[in-house]
Image 1: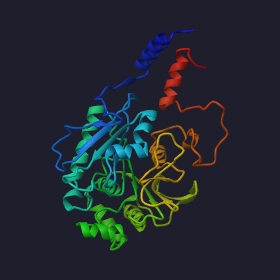
Image 2 (image 1 turned 60 degrees about the vertical axis):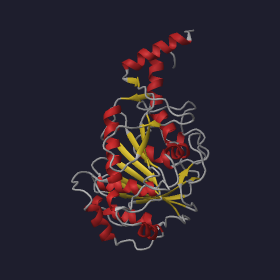
Image 3 (image 1 turned 90 degrees about the horizontal axis):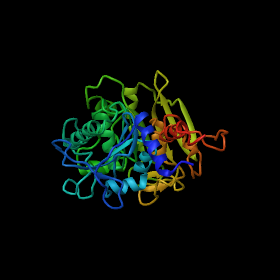
Image 4 (image 1 turned 135 degrees about the vertical axis):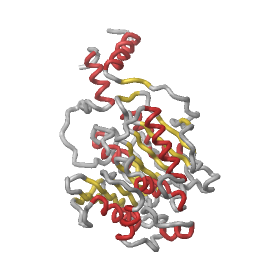
Length: 367
């Protein structure tokens, strides 16, 4: 039998030959998977940021941008949602823009402020600078940038998707609000209650006026609980209505199904792509849907155990985890009817697990 040191040396050589590499970065604060991310530009929105870069990545890795909700920090949102742990499994980078108390005493992103809801201005410009710096610094794939956020972070994620559609391949909005529907704190609270939302035509006009984009638009997924008393769920319908125009789809969905007891509605474009998805989470209040049986997520305040992981569902939708979500160890509810499979799980050859297994087989260390 080969010694452990010999095995590690052989794997290191195989890693080099297969294009895998380890990127060393600053040490994270005790108990956190995230490290400070700084020197990203002029930062007109005066935001801070954290980042998680896995040790093992292949080629040009994807980048996921995650925006926390009010009263939260980047670390708190990461611990609840499990994004950095999933990034370690699948080899993508996670960037966490973070609000400062100097900007907002409740740590909310200022999605409603006029200067923070325009391309090239305020907080959106700061987040854009972070993204461009992360792509350059970590050699990430500019064609595989995604964004998600909760509540005010969800509203800011929608703002980023509307004002910088050329930057993102897709986005997921958790209990958020449509773009450009408020310009003051009182208006923001009205919209959160579901009052005074513009017409569908006006929502689409505001989105169209946010940039001069002429290319392919990012795909959009909207997650919202039916018992959300903080952000009324008619905001979810308004977000879908807002994005239907640029994607050229009617109000009639192409598909509707039930996943783990919750309703998913899908709209497809002329090329049969799933461009809009709505996840209506039955009985859920205000928060991000998580699966309490997962070993990467932590239910708690604003991380609500509904037996379905929005983090893993979005990663799968975006092609970040080739292995099927239904094969997740410990998942108590499969997303789709489970297919027959061998007792030994077979990982995609393009996933981190698949690459490691291939390297082990090449080294004669695994059958």
